[in-house]
Length: 78
Image 1 (cartoon, rainbow, N blue to C red):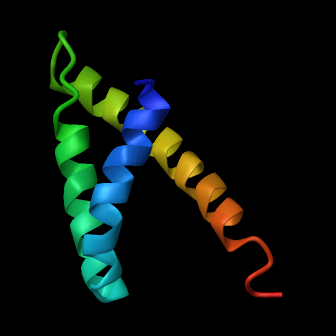
Image 2 (image 1 turned 90 degrees about the vertical axis):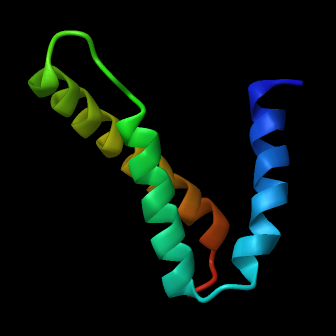
């Protein structure tokens, strides 16, 4: 199974759980999961290097999330 297929399968498992929650609760859960994901990225060389690396990751992640949101929204607001 490819990485994309595994990601889709995991999303298929998590999606229904989040779908029944308010957008505020969804946001809280996603923020916590993102923090856990970021904290798991450790860098040899010290805290400052790790902090810079995590800042780069969150920036890349934010761009990816925006791109996905635009894809999912389509012309929903139009």
